[in-house]
Image (cartoon, rainbow over all chains, first blue to last red; front, side, top):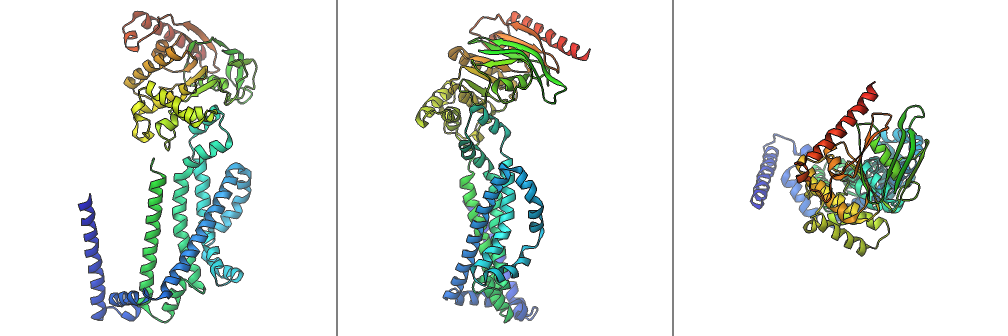
Length: 251
Length: 254
């Protein structure tokens, strides 16, 4: 198992070295224009220089703060609304057309409005991230709770289990697998929303720096930030997988 | 212990599901309900458990009272094991006792003892995913018997098992009932199973469900499922039930 993992890691390393080597060669030979595509050595240099300054870490911190705040608020609100929908289906029936109308709207189009309402700070980023996370977690919460086994519900009824016991002992654990798939997607979309809002207008954050570097044609910097964002996304997914494995070890 | 008196039930107000059903199960008696699919066996059991409200004519008494959900004198066993996949065998077996008010330690103690009785003493920390179908159903039996309710309502508990596992679990059920002396109303579609485990077998007709026969099973106890297969009287009773079942169909078709 371990040998196989080392083998795979080696294979990926060789592949990446080939891609970056080919990029470097193409750029130096003039096959591609480094003004538009950057150069791997330039990206590496940018990272080396900027990872030693506080600015990049500061941006990373503000972006992560926005992601975590929008994800937490969006998920908690969606979970609460989801529970209310399951408890009172008529409420869901009433709210459905309005929620559908908002959900089909490209949420990033709301960013200029959020910036007007909440300013260039954390508030507008959280609002965009929230608007994306909320609907994903809401639908998975409702689907998760409704997917709880009918047999488990019947068993609880025959035992005379109270509402609180049934919820915490049966409904919630039974709904976790579906809710968790929504949370995983919601977190990725929170990152998507926050970066989008930062690119449109923000005081701080990776998205704002990305937009700035792009405007001054620092393509090495843009590529470096895209690399950081990709690693951030992978890190988020990996972290969620670890939590999922711990929470759902019984599956 | 269970008294069903001229019970009639209809879900839509027009078509009867059950029609004039009368049945008595005495203390410590094991009665099986058999009948064609859709004849209302499970509906009758659910009426007794309080899962289906009795809106029609007649009267029902279970453990000296009207049927109601959560009656501590009644334990219900579903067709599927309905174990919680996130709980261990011990936690599953203790669930019913715990919900019905026992302390955590008492519930675990009773569940542990029952798991040992059903032969799963070494598997108390196993999750359902690592148990076979038979072992899962044994855990469900442990959960049901751990509650120590005087009345057991069982809805085809071995219906989804393979033939060999089913015979083993029927033997286990015979042993448990012998030891614990519960009053049991047992729904099954398997005539052999009904004859093997029961004191009486009640045969129902196709919908609307009516009782067409009430056959006493005078096989001596303790019984062994294996030995019964070689017993000629067991086969006579089986044939007798089969003919009653056929008459129920004929009546419906006629």
